[in-house]
Length: 122
Image 1 (tube, one colour):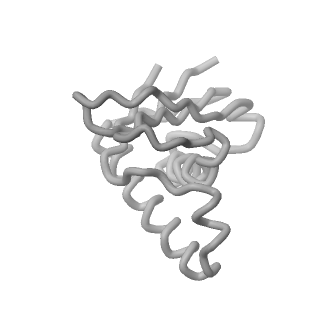
Image 2: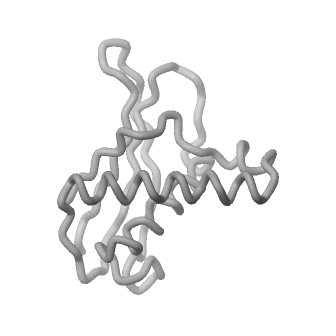
């Protein structure tokens, strides 16, 4: 299993935020997230994988604010695109990523908010 810390953005981009954005603002923000994710992937020295893999976005919020795991799909999509851009994954289609998802962890007041990706080869 490969773990990639994502220290650049918290909280992650949500579906509710995207719904309220102008499409050009959304595109610019997604490009920024992808670029920051590429940097995180390179810092983690993530090796390419052949697939199939499971990719899980883990998020531990800093507050008890409620989050729907499916609401974080726009962030997960950006992270998958960055994995393809860095050639960690050949593609993010079902042949290479048959499962991707989000897991939200309970906040801990003694630990700051955090996000990370886990890639598990099948």
